[in-house]
Length: 115
Image (cartoon, rainbow, N blue to C red):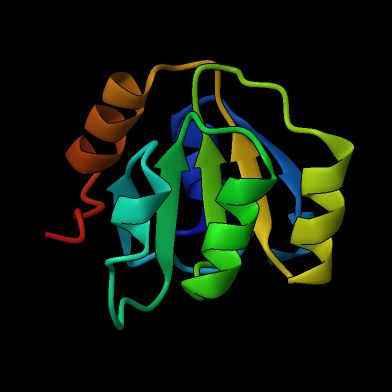
């Protein structure tokens, strides 16, 4: 499923990385605990769903080779986060939906979880 399709499904907006809207996402992991994200190994084309909206979430994605992040609950993404994401060629999408609703929508549309 592409970033564009995901964005449409969750009525979201691409905040960073619009030029990569055609990229394919293979699976999703939902967490606000970055320590859980760091346990993921060898998962290509993963999108992180999170409500943690700070530099730590972007740094965690950077360390875990995660290029796509979907921020839930309409959280405000800071300029520092966007700059760091741009420097790392990441995509950040935001939706007003809760993590539960967003996960359900994406799962029902056929996007699998990591495990």
